[in-house]
Image (cartoon, helix red, strand yellow):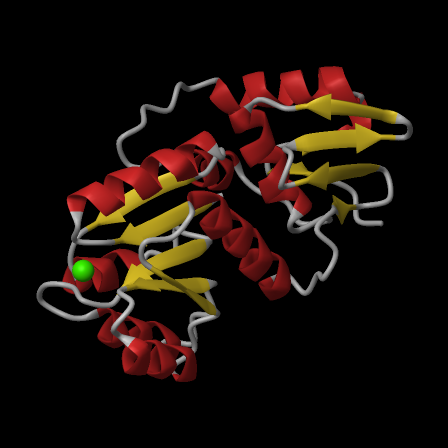
Length: 219
Ligand code: CA
């Protein structure tokens, strides 16, 4: 899952970046509202962490723009304690949740999982298609009685597929979910990761649709 982080404070941004990467997210980071708006046009991200006090255009302006485009990307506002009115405005403009700085990174990760889950129409924290299950909070995949801990990138790839069982994702779409801007994508990375996941969960856990991409079965 790829997240866009919009934060102009380097220290806070660095801390969030590290926490998200440790939790197997791909992260792109921009530091002003105008750049954020431009990046959001490409719809490459599955979640947005949005500071409100930003150079050029503020976070509320970014949010207003996003929702005016009909984009329902999960959004969490991250903002200072004294900005109560802005947080209220943010929620009214379509933010899904907010966190007050300074916050605990584990809480940020839990809230991110929750908003992504709700947007996907799921209330259970476990993603399942009847055959395999994936727990985003532990990064464990299971099949029958057996559970397996996935590597961060194996998790990212399987998570992308499990969010949309029955939908085919192309190689490019999978790469975009797993890697941020600054990360080099090796040409056979997707095949390598799928091989690793199949070794753990069985060859039929992920289906290859020849010439199109990959999918997990819909239950
Ligand atoms: Ca700021």
